[in-house]
Image (cartoon, rainbow, N blue to C red; front, side, top):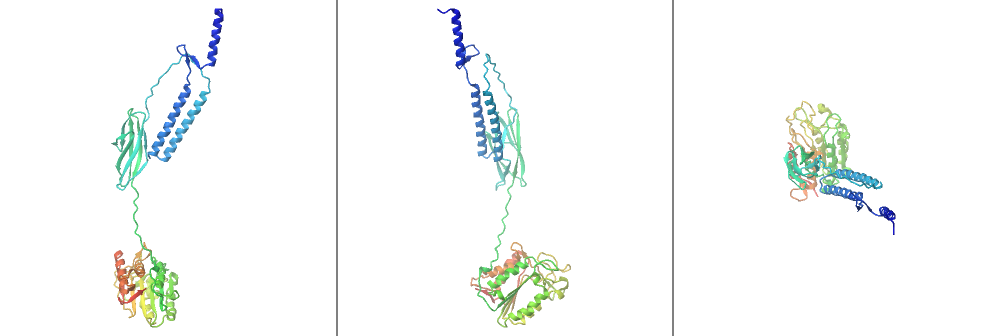
Length: 458
């Protein structure tokens, strides 16, 4: 039989063995209890909370309650916080576990001191009814007792709210305030604004000289003059553009061969240079009783002080000394008539009132209302004029042409052919020009000549 002393020694040895090789330890009561891995349990709980926060954040973003930038910033914040927590816990787990005989549990009740979180876009743009739907969400650990937008109480369900607001013409800022049961308050300011109204621009048809193609007329001749950038006075807006386009219409609509077209643009249209072409080039190319001659002029015109003479202003002309520096209209007509062409058709996008296309006065003391006498023209002449002698010849800014020139050439595309017989008479063309020009300006296009004469056919 073992002695009591030996038995005690054996029991003690067995107890120490069990302590070292088992998962049991003394509890508070002194009994042997199974050890639990509290740190593992806490870590698992932390991980669940961490994933739940990310899931909530993604839900707010998917519902368009926060912007992409706000989502990215908040996600980074959660990830950084989580990373830090896991590192701390991992370090603590390596420390040796100290078993205490007694554990005193302390429960701390914390008061909520943080206001609710408000998730909402910073800017809302009005719809066609000039209103917006302010959609958002509020969240808090405690009960939310009040939500106001611009001072008005707003209902919310499970944190979601949706309120319609009228947007003032100049827009406005509204304040959103959320309060929880502990009287913690949060607020944010959002902007409401009107959408930018896009004014529909009027579509202006571009001129198309290729719209019709008249047969080539080897006996047709054209002199085209366009003066926009004057040397000694104000510019005539778009006059160069008018002349360049009419060059193509002369070929396509009137059948003038390219080699029979003479163009004088800006500084090539000086007074003496123009007179030289009339005196030397025209006699060589115009055939008596055979040639159909076309003259186009776009630029400034002026009448003499007594209103009896009309002048076309060349590139180097001086409005103050017309008789000595400008082109007398009757003299040009007379020089052409003396060559006895079969027909002469003149297009003058100018006026004689003394005002420019952009409303400057070529002669400061000149009155627009001065009376200008009508002048007779030779028998075989047809003269289309942009306006009456005491009116201003306007521009068509959107089309970048003189108003008269634009509709003249639009008519020559075939639009003036009102009866669809593939020919345009003088009467049809002036009617088309007058209808369109007079609707846009106080300007009355004029025709001197035979209205029934066929001008274009194809």
